[in-house]
Image (cartoon, rainbow, N blue to C red; front, side):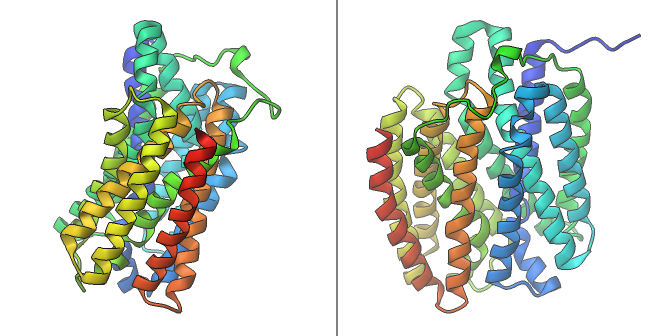
Length: 377
């Protein structure tokens, strides 16, 4: 006898869980980088290279696998993404040194690129089936926060597990792998929602350039903390614990998820303008914290910058929830912002101290944000 399909409400929860787990896996290595540095000899530039390999995987998957949900259906596309995430998790859990880290991060990037657009759209469609159009509109204001919520859970979980277990570079992946494996069953029973009319080709309309620029700017903040939080904290506290790093990064990403939810009734254009101001002020606070060695200022500045980045991303993604193709364009712009500035930071850190590199990053971002706010308005 065939298993009974899930209703749209439980299915939406299962898809949400899968998106959160895949996003959490993508940021779980952040508080573990000092451990990788001790085991494999990774320096700041090596960390940014590993991070950029992850982003390259995302960007390679988004234009192809990211649209698979429109072409072949939501369920097979997301099941494939979860399978890829499980492969990445298995590689990262094994002590294979830098090659294993690079392969695992690349596979994790592919999983994110394949999952993020289709899961974001599928959740919205399932909510519409379960709670009607009013429910869909309310949920659409919260959906963009899911990615950032998942990104925030990864470093928190990995940091505390690393600090409390005897195998800090393995246990976080065991826990995340178990969660992903458990989710395969409800995802396989979730109802398909991808109607042929929603399956768009390469010629489908894309969000305007200002919206894509907002996504780029918002995730550049995420990239800064996701890749270099341990190095920034090490300039203040020479030996930050994995739990401290994970909690700090969690606070930044959680602020990025909470701010759009709190301001969900504000129009996207205003969210983008408010986000630009918050990012500029927050990065100034982070720079001051690194220059003066003030941990509270670092956390406060990071939270403010994270909230601003979340508003920029939410304002951008709110315009692109109709198809996985349009959502994929926003995610492509966002993950480009995740990689390019951070890779530049890694190169700078081979020649100048953190304070000088952060000065360049902050100045570049502050120059970009007014253009973002004006063009997205």
